[in-house]
Length: 376
Image 1 (tube, helix red, strand yellow):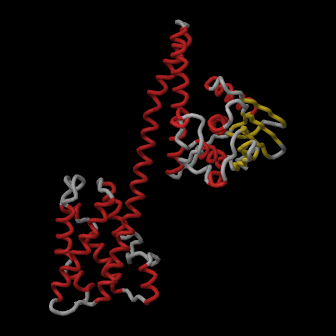
Image 2 (cartoon, rainbow, N blue to C red):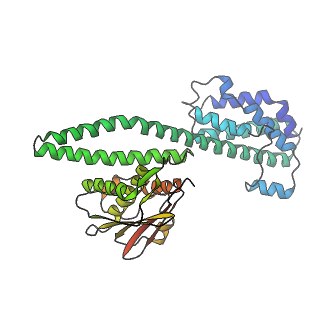
Image 3 (cartoon, rainbow, N blue to C red):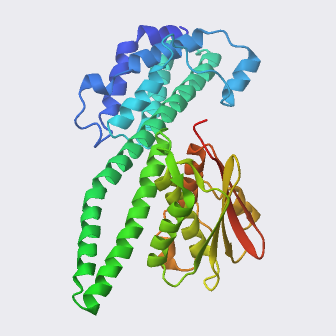
């Protein structure tokens, strides 16, 4: 008997063995009933049988063995293997348990079929085609499983970021209240430390929230209004000077700084670039912010003296979770998620602008170009 015929004629015993094995994958399977444990398996077996019955040339078989073949046949557009991967992710299985189900299925089907064929020799080509189909099904399941896990992780980060805001705001408000009480130098110094730590936590939380939005496909949210970047950036640098009183931060504006942008987002962009310059620049040299406006665009340059950025680092410097090789201190490295430059680039993109960097042995400069009216 050909393997495809055997599979279609023995869906129930094969599914029963699948269910029995899946029940051993604890703790995820502990609270799952029989229908949940075997959900999608019969359709998966039908998809595999249909794949076995589909004509396949040697070239197509060779391509499939290298992972270049088409997915399993399913007129609905989404295979049972893909649905199974999503279900197992939602039920708390791990990827090793998911793969183990397919190993057990492969062994069960081949053992039952060869026992049924005895003493005849099974069709060897059917075994090859079956293994290819199972490998394809496993690949589809793992892909959808990983996508579901990633989505779950992003949703968790979003909820975490949202729920952390209220207690953090309470800490910052209490610190500010202590600072204005003028209750002695020790209390004032403690309040100042709380304020600085709260500002750092707020920046990390903002970066985490924005990163989460981009991973969910939502992008960085901007609300443009008519603002003057000279005023917006002056306020941001004043705040950064309070946090880093030992660093000199310079601002030079030429041309028209008026335009249609999201002022708070551009403050965030500037803050991320300046903090990066503070972390990696020479501590005894200033960080210079230069804003230049022309008729249609505005250019923002953030420059610092220090060691040059290597070519390999430059190529991936705006990737998320990337850090430069030499922060000035371990404390500053712990205060960064490696998202600042990535978020800055996303804010520039949200304004239909561009960001780039150049670096030599003398100076590193991040340059942002923004259209004066990104809505057009």
